[in-house]
Image 1: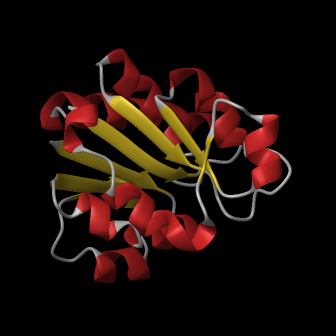
Image 2 (image 1 turned 45 degrees about the vertical axis):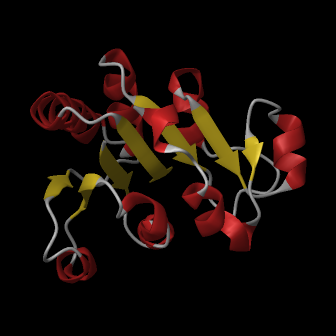
Length: 163
């Protein structure tokens, strides 16, 4: 299985890095923004640099949709795994069109409502994971994961469910 790991920088990026116990067992590549930190962290990884900023920037949204189409056609992933934020939207939508499994893990900081990114991609998701019971109750389609148990939750997903 090949996975596209899609995230913005900062906490979203670190959250996705922390799931390495799941995704390192597969072929993968990253989509994120080029910063000094991401260049260092991903120096030995295959990376496609997305366009930022994504907030209220129509030009970069269009550029990222084009990048998503190009990367998905080239890499042909079976899964798109994202922790947000805005950069995830084009990749999840294009990925779903091309029959990828799509998984979004909502930020730990989202306690009462989903992020705008999660709301936008919700119709295109195969799985939405949230980290607070009140958020799972509000979005019954989501699955609750314990904040400190994210890594162990993903190690238990049989690979056959995502191929």
